[in-house]
Image 1 (tube, rainbow, N blue to C red):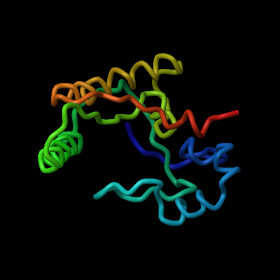
Image 2: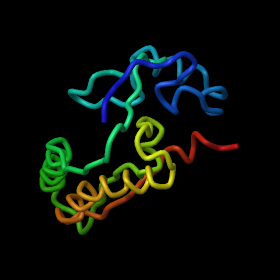
Image 3: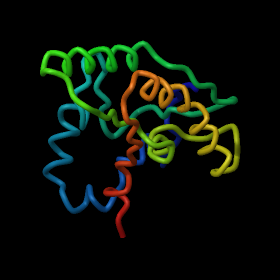
Image 4: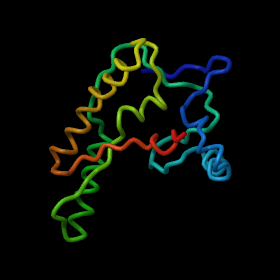
Length: 147
């Protein structure tokens, strides 16, 4: 995966054009001003409209990142500090949400691309389950893609 400059008329993210954005312009103006909808420590803000686009130019490979391991560890410590819990869950993005931000320039077939994203996410999903948590796979795009 790599970042490349946008071509004329191209959007860098599926978040840049949604009916939800049209319906809630003030919310999206605020998010655009600060550069992100989320506050992830250490993450560089993503300003809109984007200047670059993340594209897949070869086979997608999965890996469990240090960030996921760190998140799991922090959550375990927080649960311990709170006195424990019988069960807890961690949300991880669905492959279908990732294609709002990562674009295919390799597979040429949407189904193959999304399945490749799913295969790549397998290790992250497994890390959550192996740590003893319930895995909740979320697709926030469901709420921004309403018709």
